[in-house]
Length: 202
Image 1 (cartoon, one colour):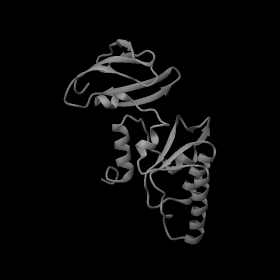
Image 2 (spheres, one colour):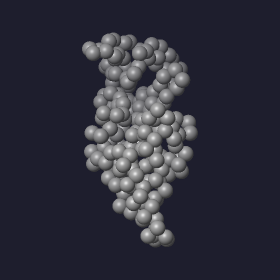
Image 3 (cartoon, one colour):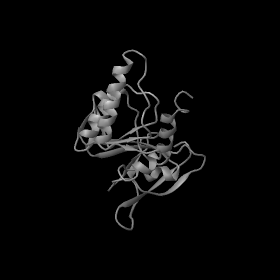
Image 4 (cartoon, one colour):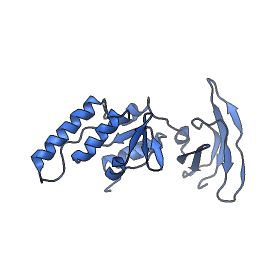
């Protein structure tokens, strides 16, 4: 429960159920993150939005880095502002640094929203795979995106699904090595849907 019962675990579960791909990030990884064309770029990958779950305490250095990312054009959503710094050493000095970092983040236009899902909707891409009860992992590649899709439910999935930004889809079955093209149809207003057949556990 140290993770699942906390705000970070609850937000991660909700976002996953709503079809948002996500990763966890550490203070150290944030320190190595930069902004390029509005994207948060970390070693190995990039992200559209930084979501900061509600936290009672946050180091001033972390809040200062988040403010710098927002000033550089990153989209940042706080569930709510952290209340204070951790620890008691140099408390007055660190609290002053914390207040300055929060003011800089506010000036940079970070979003503070208790409903993170609603705040994400206009700025982040979600996958309709989640609406079908399917679990997925999405990774960017030089050719587009790779998806690992699993049916962890008790019923087979046989139906049409929409995959964000996909023009064609090649299906690869890791259980037997079979590959092939997924049946495709156009959707009203543009885009495509693909037919996916997954038994429970596939």
